[in-house]
Length: 171
Image: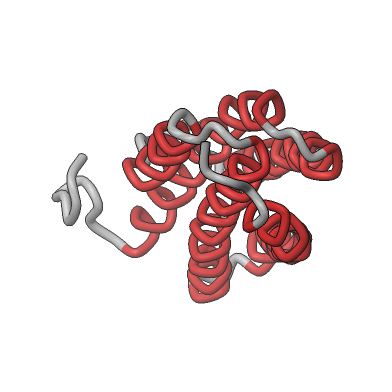
């Protein structure tokens, strides 16, 4: 299915497609986070990634509930955006030798993921409300609130870890 595909013939179908997109994204994030946990050297960052991994699993459970409410099978559609964000993060992390700089890069990558999720969930909430699905919007809002909270925590870590990274000396 491509952009503006004939398979999406209604607003309702577009809404379902975007749910499937974020379902894919959340599942990809659960695969990427353990690698980020392993690479992080800052214990607080590692713990934050572990917490977010558990939250992400809960977010997938909420999406499964939403699919059930809609009478749809939970199904993912490939999300090139999240694939690209994760690929870029992996490539960048592989190029960084200094662990302090690596932590700063991991935080930046995690925030890119969070910002993507925030845009998707915000849109899905607006669309759910437009489609008269306030209950679905409420479930999505729980996840959006978690994404904002995670982004705030990452920003606080970035302030601290960016200062550490700035002290790194070239080899």
